[in-house]
Length: 342
Image (cartoon, rainbow, N blue to C red; front, side):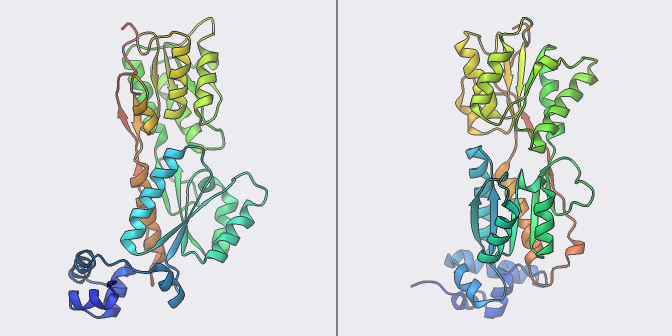
């Protein structure tokens, strides 16, 4: 027989209303009461019917995740983190892939929110970096949280989870410099993503701090794709003066660069060190495994959902919710990098 909210209330020794307040994450619930109700929910394996809650309540128990990102691993990790938090709080997650460059994207987002009766949205790049999307949601009085690249939010930008790509890229570049590499190339990601610019800036800053000039021929525009890495490495390794190391803007690009180097009979890392970014499965599926920066996308997404739920709960004092979590991806050294003379 399906467990009901009545069963949870009886098990915890509280009223149905108290169980509802716990599930809605209302701030007025005492910790001992919250823990008692959650213990009953876990013991009985209670799964609230979010669809029924939406119909029976003036509140919505669904949030949305809108994305336009070619990296499937990034999307899967984001969905996992969001789903974990939604399950914890009794919410449903609506996943909506779309084209950020569509001329009608603002109207599409507004229609999605209205028709699906969403409590709020999680915005990841490039949507989190589009002011007109944020403005439209603010006009609709819809809560949203942005996941953005940077160590501090831009002026006027609130409710963010920040990823410090600059510092992480600086550390990766510094790792290559400490290995004795001075001829280091950079394979860029899509220009419309702030992360691309932040990672390139961190790369340049590390070179400048060592008194090294940035070689413009070693900066290769591209996209967040395997094919872009293949073409970028081919271009670099046919130059008269070749780099001894490549820092790619993400692991997929780095995997493509490694593949391209292998086709040119270049030994990795003896003749060319390669580093990526994000610690996606691409970094572990290549041989040798890629030096990279671990970006915990599931945890980042979960933090974004938790911040959103603080805003959507009843009687939330939004002016006092000032959390702006900052994640610095952690350097992971693997076999794809070695000293310049190895």
